Length: 211
Ligand code: IMP
Figure 1 (cartoon, helix red, strand yellow):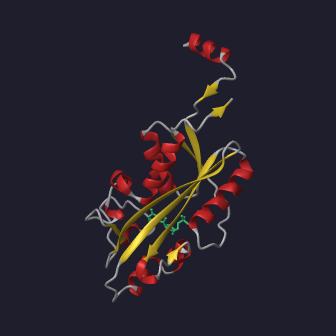
Figure 2: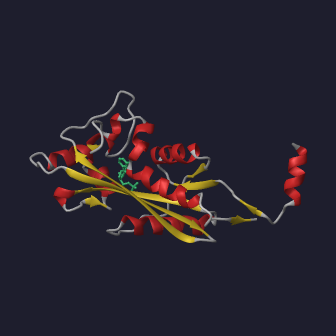
Figure 3: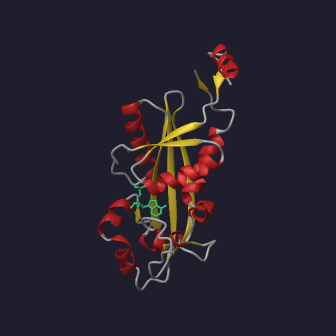
């Protein structure tokens, strides 16, 4: 063991492939989803319990970029930030970037009420991940999943899921996100797709942290 440590220290200045990342978020559900995916491919994730202030924008990538820059400027450590939105076809994409406000105010019951007589229930969940470091500046990763808004809220026995999960059913499944286990949701969720895009880049030769 000691021998390895000595060997390492004599290699000071070499490229070290650091396989961990900080996720700036105040949302434990999101953190658990992201950690589960990244840790399964050997990237450790730490939670930085902060997220820069959300600007008003009709673009979730721009919101995530602003949050990432704000968080990075405060702590100067490489990090990721994620912003998500639910885009409902019948409402021309609303609430989209205003999803947090809509969830906070009318919640799922309010959305179901607004959609009571609508047959077109198609919706898309989008996730925007922004990575920020001194070396790379900001980098963007995106994930989307199409599905429909259910007619009632549907949760599973283990009370998993959060936010709009009980009313969003991806086309590829019989279950809403809230009826799925974490692993099932991570199989093909908007966030999982964005995280996998990030991981692809993170594991690629394009990335080196130099110490
Ligand atoms: P934000 O990314 O935290 O701004 O999320 C916007 C809104 O969408 C919040 O009310 C979240 O609870 C909700 N939300 C974000 N991601 C998900 C998800 O994966 N499932 C269900 N709701 C989500």
